[in-house]
View 1 (cartoon, rainbow, N blue to C red):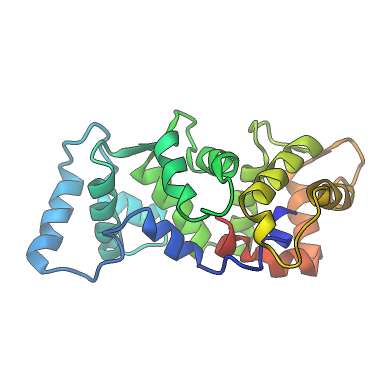
View 2 (tube, rainbow, N blue to C red; view 1 turned 180 degrees about the vertical axis):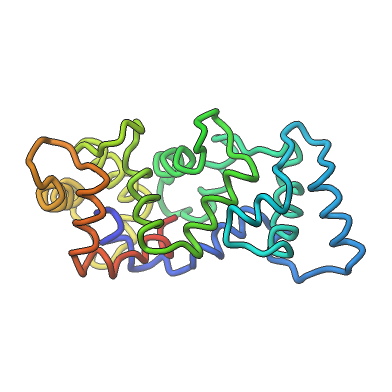
Amino acid sequence: MGFLYAQNNTKRSIKERLMKLLPCSAAKTSSPAIQNSVEDELEMATVRHRPEALELLEAQSKFTKKELQILYRGFKNECPSGVVNEETFKEIYSQFFPQGDSTTYAHFLFNAFDTDHNGAVSFEDFIKGLSILLRGTVQEKLNWAFNLYDINKDGYITKEEMLDIMKAIYDMMGKCTYPVLKEDAPRQHVETFFQKMDKNKDGVVTIDEFIESCQKDENIMRSMQLFENVI
């Protein structure tokens, strides 16, 4: 799928990229007084979007309390309103791929993070997605990838949806891969993978078909670097 050929040039890790969304989040742990202040802010948030309690987020994610404090500090610094809208997300993401057009892919990625589909990514949305991508199991990552490819969120992936994602990845970084990809490369990849995944030939790929195909294909499993290279 899209993650098979996006492996060559963009080797910055997903953590590095997502941390750049939060410039303050990669800072070293600060003094106890500042940590307490951050925790107080999280518990007594006055921004328009009030985040869930720290303990609840800790239970729902694979981050420690200290990590969540640091992440929240950076998130609030960049997003005082407590949420990121799509245009801001696109602007930030375009910095990672200045050589291409990341607009469409950033749109799809934003929708994958925006789990309640309200047009904004909250701190909770960000943390839950980041937790899966950085520390989730293979099964959790495949579920997340399926959600990314299921553009209209109807529980199925169509050939058109897969092609849309592939084209978006190509627009973003295809010209910078080695060897350089041909213009029809996205469609060729889709034809190959969709045929493998659509087991019952009904024209759509279910999540079970998707996960089974990925787990049985060594190339796809190796290319779980998708979460290291493209996102």
